[in-house]
Length: 415
Ligand code: AMP
Ligand code: MG
Image (tube, rainbow, N blue to C red):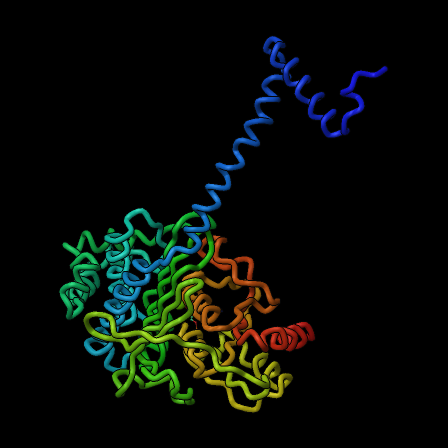
């Protein structure tokens, strides 16, 4: 007769055997088996801890980024006002890009102001910015011009100014601040990307340019802000051909467009002090891609206008393209003033810079769009200072993006 236990259910039998093995192991001296067993049990006890970590991560993912957005909006607004003031005091029709050109002065000044604000609010964060202070260190008169502007760039609201940490203290501090934008970028931690004046040619001709700021966390864009002083304040104003020049200070111009991941995109008038009230924006619903208005660069060297025309033809688009400089293209389609943004590589070896796309990419996606490269891959902001894994940019409403990519592939593939 077998003992009763062998007649019980197999699961009870299994539990008994496992218990006996564990009991036997606990009597063994320190053998190689024991540490293994400990490792095994610690793996299981770690489970709840890693669940807790996931919870913390989820909370971070769902972070409101309210403070980041507020600082970014105010910093971009202040820097945008500086660029406007330099246009008036120094541009006077010059189209030069020499050392002391308005665009150089504006670039340095805007970068100094934005980094100063970020350093005050988020001293631990890394920064990728386009400019470095080397030229200013070597050229005293240029440095003085920039310092003069930076000193006088204040928001007309003392509490907003205080939020940004107040003025920079000296020319030397200003140079050090400018050089803080030298991060190599990458896929971990909090990294801000700044383009102090995107669309330099547009700036010089009084057309479209943008002051751009994006926050990436672990390579993912979380907050994006664009200062667009020469775009219409009104979201519904359709894009017109002349938008690319002589818009500075025309009535009803100047807007801040922003987005936070998971919270949508917004637009507000560009003010001079505290932030104006914002309202949410969406891309225009597009029933048929053939009705689209598409935006592209003014500079033929930045995006192939011939390829864009071929792609448009393939999609049945009959409206002429709207050409404008800078990330104003992203802002314009995000609020439904246009529909598509095509950026088609001209030079095979050119790599796009993260500061030219971080804010715009998030703004369009949060407004209901899709942003990819010409192959349909999402832009990868975790690769350093450039988008080395991507070629070109195609931004479109979700409903037609795949169709646009198909046309892009067929045109580019046939070359
Ligand atoms: P956009 O105003 O849209 O034409 O873009 C302006 C940006 O184009 C500048 O900030 C430059 O970083 C970038 N850029 C410079 N050279 C090229 C190029 N060959 N292809 C694409 N973008 C470029
Ligand atoms: Mg740029």
